[in-house]
Picture 1 (cartoon, one colour):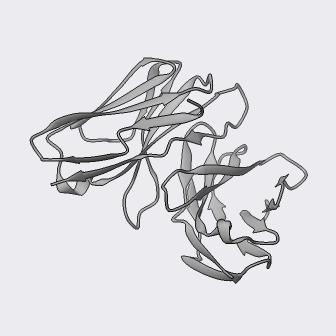
Picture 2 (cartoon, helix red, strand yellow; picture 1 turned 60 degrees about the vertical axis):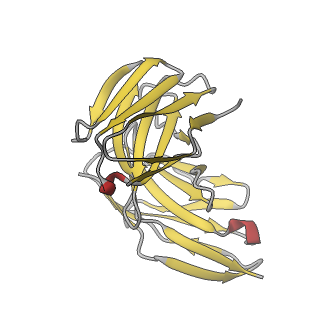
Length: 111
Length: 115
């Protein structure tokens, strides 16, 4: 069975600082995808970034990057130059067609 | 309309009511999903439809009945629900490719309250 663990229930960061959200996973599948989603208070899940297990390079999308360490089974999300609008719940997920989600981390950006 | 839309956005119903949640995707995807998000619990996959056929039913009680009439529309029919079914119900869609990993795109959700 696949499992995602997000150990930080909440994080508080000063605006413009970089922030790292932790995600570890467990799976016996040789091939899988790792995803990060953002959920603002409005409820919609917004896709941020994706990493394939066979990808050699870490994925980047604008201010988002995924620090993928396969041997450690970790897929941390790094947000550079945080903004007030980054305040939201962040979910790590893994799988192929069926995704398993972690418990989420509530990120609060302070002005 | 763009992306994935869901109606209604909010729904309050009694335990004896029958209601339906609607989801429509405008992305040309070939797979659609229903998720349940309860407070303090991870997102739970309920149903998966791929190419309009149900491929997953994660031990969901029969009081939840999905319907996928075509690749763009997905319904969740609700009847005789329980208060513990109160949650945010999220619909998602994706383009399933052989050997690939497909990001899912979500709708805004329906906030359901069962009295």
